[in-house]
Length: 336
Image 1 (spheres, rainbow, N blue to C red):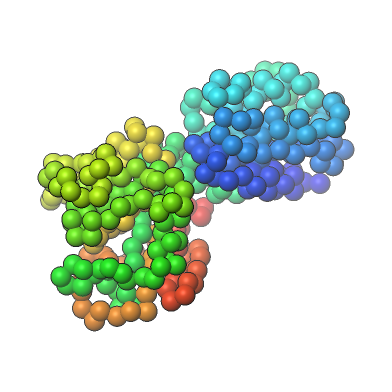
Image 2 (image 1 turned 60 degrees about the horizontal axis):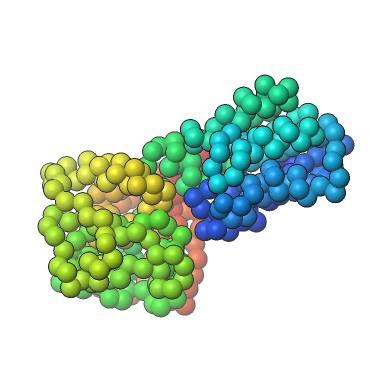
């Protein structure tokens, strides 16, 4: 059988994990093969517990010799919450070949490939690399681009407005669509909004009990009123921005959030914030909630020609709620 078949099995193992339980680690799966048959399986189930390779080795009914190990990410070579996975592979003396989908982008964890080679184990790299990266896009974006994985979210009317002319916007979508947003929040490290959104809507910006609450990030040119809901939650506030070059400000924010170990960022700002992120190019997904309501006039979600932007996006999913629709777009470059 081809390597890609067994690696696909390893990817399916990785997908068994709950990303929120594994975080901040990536999803990793592993299978052990002997005589063209899978004899062991494992995946990383929870942060600070055994990694996929160790779980796969422990799943074996008995020790083996000259087996092949397939894993979706380079075995780690550093001491973290667990000893290096590469040590467990080498010390077992069970493997003649290790097939790895993609090298680890985390500089602290990399080095497993060289350790395996030094131990005389054959290493093959790059099998189903695209698929392995795809299941951990946030992890790879964070370490390779040195910024959070950015999701832009807005809710608009059928005719393209996110608020009325007076700025009022509650509620464009129905309760079930808003619940979906809260679930998305629970899977992100941080949520970012602009000062206008905070002062106009006074939102809580939490997950409404559906999971962990994201850290709150606010773009504001002045201090917030202490009576606002978010003021009590120790938000991270970015001030003193260059208003003439708002796209440059986005880079400053993301650089700082990278230093804060924020892997994923949900942006729920108004027109100015969404427009600045889109124009900067520093985003990876767009979650567009479309309501059947019409305002006829109001504040648009984007301060430019969005048709030109759509050519660089790919619609990857469309989910219907009771009345609203969520369209998820990703940059086409992410599909490469």
